[in-house]
Image 1 (cartoon, rainbow, N blue to C red):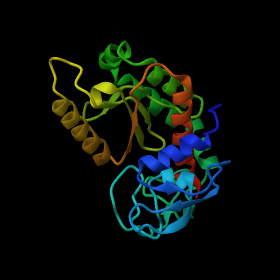
Image 2: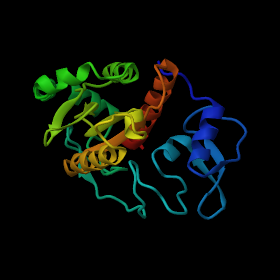
Image 3: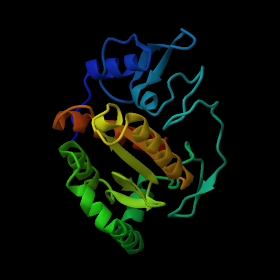
Length: 242
């Protein structure tokens, strides 16, 4: 299981976003933390799992999960993809009313068959990239397999791929190493890499998938991967079930 996040990590994460953590301890992701807003400078309470989703300050500017400033709007009730009951979603990416329906959907033969077919679409391209995958990325994918049915390096988005795709949740995860932030290749400029990333993200979102980028600037580190995976699980669970 992923390791519990430390107080130092939580404080650093919040600080990196420009906000100030006033609480002196951290025990769980749904704990109400005392914080100070970087925008309006007011003190307020917020849960870390909500903060990770991008809802930095609910009474100021709220950042939507996966990026972009927007005033929160109440979504209309929708029909659960599995049980067909109407429910009130908390996010536009939610299609299932409960974790039970989510698990039941993953178990259906239809879903497993579709996942298998989607995985096969990667073909030679996926096999070619396999040798270039970092150990951290491979370990993260293995953690995902314990919870979800996934495909890796599948060119599902108009021949653009993602490192990990969870089709049941419509989530595409990009595990971005140093080459996405520093010039490493002599044949490709940093601007070209980042422009390519923007195009890929736009196409993924056109398909209605949420794009999540995990920045990995270091060497093989299972503790780092465990923390990133726990952050992802907390974000997904909060989005699905709140």
